[in-house]
Image (cartoon, rainbow, N blue to C red; front, side, top):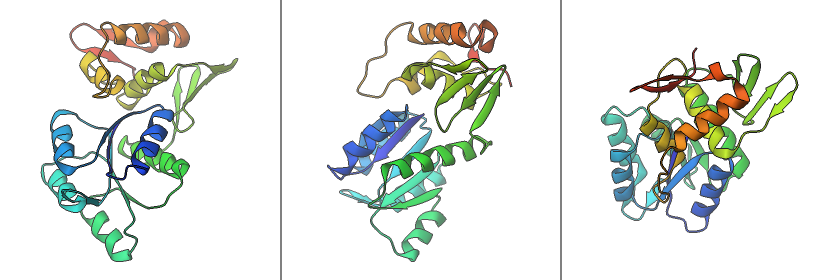
Length: 218
């Protein structure tokens, strides 16, 4: 997934970003709401992590505006504001989860995975892909003979296609999940990783349609 982290804490921000990347996702980290607005205007994020108290304003109006535009992106609030009234306000504004600081990074990872699965319409992290079994929570692929070793970006491509099973996903859409703003897009990258996945999961595991992209059949 490509995740937008909106957090101004110079100590917490890098730690959360490193955890997101270690979990196999992409992370764009901004410290102000103005930058968050610019990011959400150009990228269709899979999930947003939102602090409530930022240098240029509060996170709640940003969240309400996001929902007011019809955006359905999952949002998890990360904040030190721990009163019940604060939690109610955040959830009523459109947040999907609310995590009070300080928190364990492994718990954050679990919550990200749970919220993403609910939005995908299947809270079960286990997916059957032919003879293979994919565990989205553990980020593992297994077959009867044992585990299948996937690189970080191979996993990102596979997860992107699985979350859109039955729909063709275009090359630019996949590239958006492979590269953050800080990274340059390499030519033919998507083709390379799709080819590697086919070698590991079978030629028929991923379908290609010229002009439309790639898909995993439902």
